[in-house]
Length: 336
Image 1 (cartoon, rainbow, N blue to C red):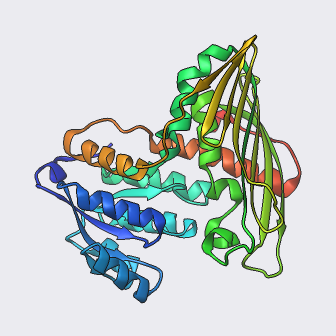
Image 2 (image 1 turned 120 degrees about the horizontal axis):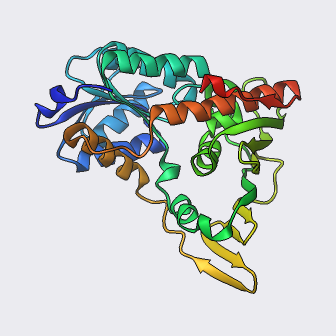
């Protein structure tokens, strides 16, 4: 996809970071701990937060991401900011000849994401879309035990987070976060990684809001029918008018079931229930960062491709159209 000789010829890859939130802090920590990387500069939402972040992580504070992607002393741009801006920053960074690491989603618009992947190939630069849900203990436990339940016919995946009062932050902003299952595209990506191509989708969603930009609650319920015949139900909810938290993944097969509830997991078969070690969700951004550096310096394989992320974005876009229209949307595999 790209020629890594320029990076391999250096002792370090020089990194510019966009963002000062939770994911950005974990990225900065991982970059500082790896001698192959040097955090050159950071830019955040406000000058004040950027200055504080830059001081904590021993780097330079900039005023705009446009300035960061144009710097000659930056080899790679890591994008850990609001979802709305991912596509524009990735496109600009690639245009300036930088490698790009971006937290999911690559863009909130499918066509824009498609164009960015084509640009990365044309520029011969690395484009890595983070999907750490694939590295976590839950996903690994699912993969290791899936064969034991036989042919899977139904999956239910629910992540519900009550927050009262709901924060006035970007994750509750229509424009900055995007459609729920695009902003939280990992819910769909996990399913697609496990079960393959999607045939049809439908979706219903509702917002509770007292102002135009921010909502207090969202509830989004989608059904995906896979080519295998599997029916998957994805439930995503957060906010003030939700009263019981839930993080549950259920797999129902012809020979048994897998139930993951929070940090506990069980394999259920006729006459027996066996506990499953789910593992941890800690350290995944550091693991992702290490794998990126391994790929740049040693050509080690990455765990996900931009094309895989793009296919999930295509499904998420269909889910959004289903929610807006109230119709079942058929996916055209000719476009895959």
